[in-house]
Length: 401
Image 1 (cartoon, rainbow, N blue to C red):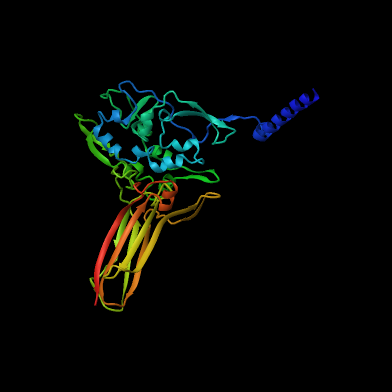
Image 2: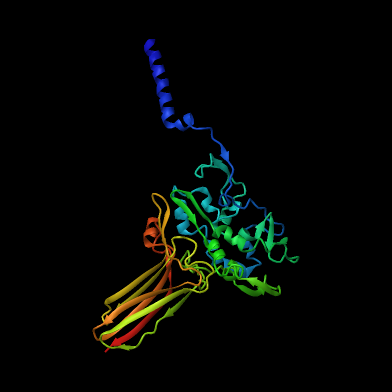
């Protein structure tokens, strides 16, 4: 009997030890407290009802009437915000908290869960419940028509309309640059190794265009056309949202908005032996109201110049880079930043003493990059993922006599 009692006591002690080891947080920590969401990026647009006169919240259905607008939006990076392979790769990481999706699918109807709060304020411990209004097809549309044009279960327009089959509320203030900046100006160190740094709004406010032009002036160029077929033409805005021009998918057809001017120094067709080649390419941020590049800190621009002989051998080269560099571990911090300010110019030069007769070629190319090859490989993005586009390319042929 004593042996049996001893075994029971031993089992109880062992069980308590296991509980202590596996769940010692419950033994010593303070009680769990559900903290409310307070940061703007922690919140989404609450679930919306389909306004009377419409059959869904999907852009595909908006496009039944607003044909041109829909076709423009389909080629935009907004339309690919959720499906973007780079974003999906980031979501799969353990370090990716719940709120990273809030700018990519900003309507609660697009999100599978409703976040009710955070356990003890920990962003990695959200209190979740299933969203009864979740629409998976709507989620695939990313930043779509209703992301901007639907609030309080009603369609919002810049002018209002009494002819539309659905209710339209006039609210130009809502459809102002403030709406753009709500996502394009997030600047916070969320955790020591996670920084969300998109400062385009702050750059614009500090630049020469503030009070004169805004996001819409450049990224939604004004046009004149009917709201839908059969309607009279009126003032409107382009809905492709031209920007960097780097597509998310090969066949997307993203539109680039010109921000830089390229000024070349003069090249001669012939040089003498012992002459010096001194070529300068000047890049000027002549058109953007913010820095270039802007937004994602992983973006950068490369300036490459190669002087080649008649056999195609590179005998001189020059390389430049515009962009930020970051260290992400063990603590996220910016190491350098030479982005071009609005109106700023920068020279890139290649020099070479021409001491051998013959024919030569100077190749100059400027490329705009979304992500480095190293980062793309780390995120397991295939070669088919568009990483950069060429924004300037020119060859100069000359002879040394």
